[in-house]
Each structure stands twice: as C-alpha cells, then as structure tokens.
Length: 102
Image 1 (cartoon, rainbow, N blue to C red):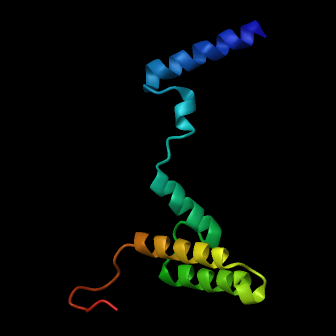
Image 2: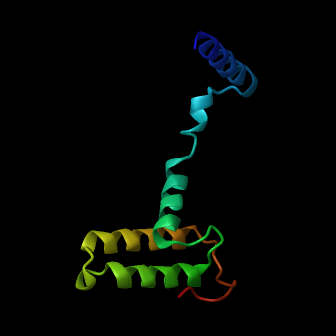
C-alpha cells in the first residue's frame, strides 16, 4: 500500500513538472460553456456536427414527449427550449451575404 502511494505521488509530481498541471486538474479543465453545450447536445440527443434542421427536429421530438399535456413538466419544456437555443446560437452563420436574416 505504501509503495502504491509513493508511486502515485511520483507520477503526480512528474505530471506537474512535465505538463504544468496536476493530474486532477484535467478532470475539471472543461469550460462552463463547453459543458453547457455538451449537456444541451445530450438533452436533445444530437451529435456535435448536427445542423439547424437536426437540432430543430430533435427539439420537436423531445417537446412532444415532455410536454405537460403528455405527462411532462414545464421545466422539462424549458430545458429543451434552452438546449435548442444554445445549440442554434453556436452554429456558424449560414446566411449568404446580401440576404436579409429570417
């Protein structure tokens, strides 16, 4: 047991010297925004490369399942709406130049 602790301490120290961070800092290195985007994708069930139509279709499917008239809650609908809005805001602007936005 002592040997394991000594080896773990040496590996942690080596990681700090080589990479400039402690090993446990890699567990919390994701930004809050990237975590929110990850959670929004997970909520809607879309992939990272989902386009506008994929996000909207996934949102419609989810809201149809969690709507209060179907036994869901308004909080679930709000969560789905927030996920949709966040992911749509993250998409690159696809409007061609000279075309007015919708």
